[in-house]
Length: 303
Image (cartoon, rainbow, N blue to C red; front, side):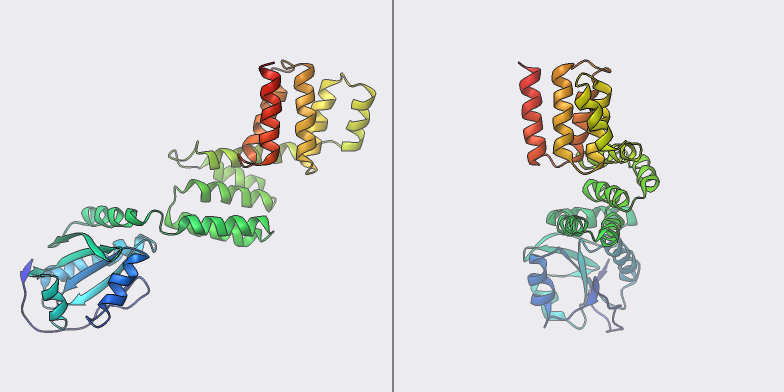
């Protein structure tokens, strides 16, 4: 850490995440921008030895944060007024701005591990940095049939946050929509421990199980004829439910399973109830089919 003084020098690299600024643009590039995303401000000078060590390490950590923070570099020799206003007395000095105010900072060079902790701490101030909105956009793509675009978006989100459960589950479901069951299976098997049992990943797991069942499902018409001829043929009714689900008739599949459960809740070690839960897990919790099905199942369980 050096006291201020010395000669001016070259500018730092430019970029979307990292750029040089002057006091003329400080309000726009720091104060205003920090109302949208945390901004790291590196006060430096070209004659400062510790600055030369800290700057690249700080830029690397900001880049690895994947857009959750921005960084600006202020040459204190060329912007003495803003340095004086912020009482910068020695360099390197680093401030973090959020919502228009300085919220964190440090002086002097730090090891890479502490720099990363600082960046992560600052990035956390803004939540997920817009990843939630990106997931919503990818889900919309998936719903509209733009499956490849959805998969790419989910993958990009995971590039920024490898343990984002919604993106991980979404990527698995995108592979299923593309008919890439083995890829979905491999991705599920490789799920990080931190999110392996997250609801979004469990939903994808349920969808994968249903997709594998669909590959072996029989013809709906034939199975319907068997059940109509012999309503007590519970295996045929169970197979019909699987065939209906494979054909996209989810509510009808749930109705068949509820009827099977009503007839014999213990049949095949409770297979009807287990299959119902698999279907419910694969759907969104507030899906009308889930709400109606759970209500009917509960009424039979506690009757």
